[in-house]
Amino acid sequence: MENQRGASEDLGGDWARFFTAWMRHPGKMGAIAPSSPRYCATMVEHATTAIEGPILELGPGLGVVTRALLEAGVAPERITSIEYDPDFARTLKQRFPKVTVIQGDGFDLDRTLGERAGMRFSAILFAIPILSLPQDRRQALFADYVGRLHPGGNLTQLSYLPTAPVKPVPGLFSVSSTRTVWANIPPARVWIYTPAGAEPKAETAPSAAGKARP
Image 1 (cartoon, rainbow, N blue to C red):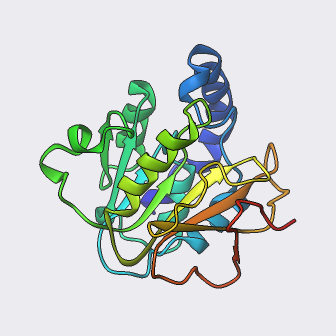
Image 2: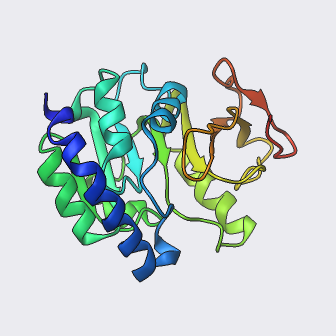
């Protein structure tokens, strides 16, 4: 299968490449190491991939979540992956030739998506570092993202923090979280951002104050 090709062979080399890229551009890397298979499966489990339509990955790195999406049965043609690092983007294109991979800035979707800027997505999976931005800028970005979702869609975010990296905005989106996934380096949770008027997916806890479940 395409998504399994070379998976075990890639793992060790990916750790080294990830850490090297983090050392080179720490502010543009969402993690110091690839996420674990268990964490990736959790992220995909809570994404609204069952809704028809394209799926947007922001900050796919070397494709561990991309692979989890494919293993969950998502057709590669549905996935658009935006990766800032040119070397990572080239690797993604080689590993997942049927996935649409765009090298560009996930914080400037209109420019990066180009003629696809008007697309609506069934789910957005987010793994770009955002903590260096002020909270109001983070909220503005996520308001833009959730505005690009199909009805019933959500945005899922990788984070190591015990509180929501992006606070809820009443009338625009709410925030909930999974439990901590300990089988990851470092342990992390998935934060789920749901447009106003929609219900969070099952097994998540509403987080009006941005606090997570243990």
